[in-house]
Length: 442
Image 1 (tube, rainbow, N blue to C red):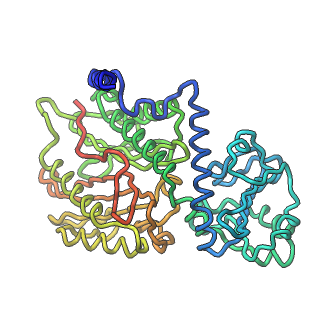
Image 2 (tube, rainbow, N blue to C red):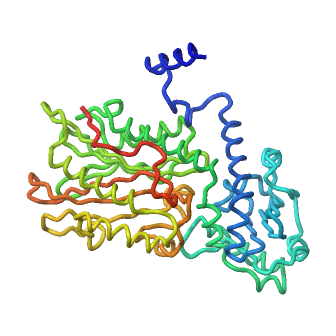
Image 3 (cartoon, rainbow, N blue to C red):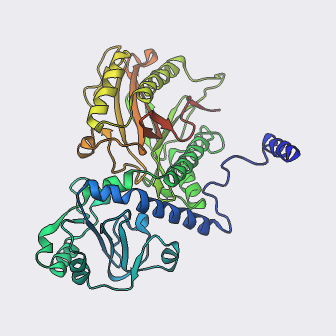
């Protein structure tokens, strides 16, 4: 055993095996391996998360309806399948420890073998199915704010009203909060998958902002974006935001994004993107400086600005935790950052013309999409500010810090930091190595 451990250590030292090198790779058994992981996630969520989400929201039947060619946004999470005409995933609380799980008119041989559903049928009389269970409140995927919870079309809604008839049509309600709770509360199998997705994204971003991809004076911002898209295609990954944002920041703010602008020495590059892996979606940023001849580090003022952003991130890390509404926790975090000597920005990118170091946070839900549907400490998710942060919620810890740069005549450099984490009762816990420094392109 000791000889085997020593051999493995020597192989790792020589660089013959790289930790996480296989994540997202295309191997001969990759399709089955991903399916098995998604099957486990689905069964865990149905067993552990679904009962509490339905009961907390007072919904005893949840109908997710879809048509051929028009899948609900939760189709992947709930198990996929072929919808011949109209199909349903229906979840009914009939008492006991489990929720009845039915896949009706949505067929898939692999999903059936997974065993996550205990009722499977190629078709259904929806009215008869509902009457036989006599639900008091029937949740449908309708939402004003969240696209992932708004999959029901107008015609499908009319179809359901007609099919269930009286008195059940009067019992139809929005399942918005149920969808948010079910999707954003995480099982261990999901957390592992999301950690893998985050590590994949980190690797791609840091390779993209390196001399592996960039040759100063020759490579364009669009070239970097296309390299990322090719890498994601090669590894069978989805994209949270389509074209990655590869941009240059200067005294006047963002100068160009994912365009034909050629990267030059002295440029400050930033990347904002997200990957999709095992139905987990990330949102991540990285920063790089392109060295001028004779330089070995980024300018001291840039490094100071980066350090200020890290200090803001450290306050978020030690302050945010589960157990309060997102709005209450955001207020606590902002107050703590203020006590650390930073000035809250009046509005996004509304910079003061002084020497203050300003900040604004946008710590939003992540995982079910690059901008997720769980509780969010973010001004751009007003409805989700009212949701309670629960242990296992995934967050993008996103912030912007603005520091005056002397060589820019006092104009402020915006440093964005963004890495993904889980929030527990202990606080923020990172799921992969976060951004520690300004990367260097030589």
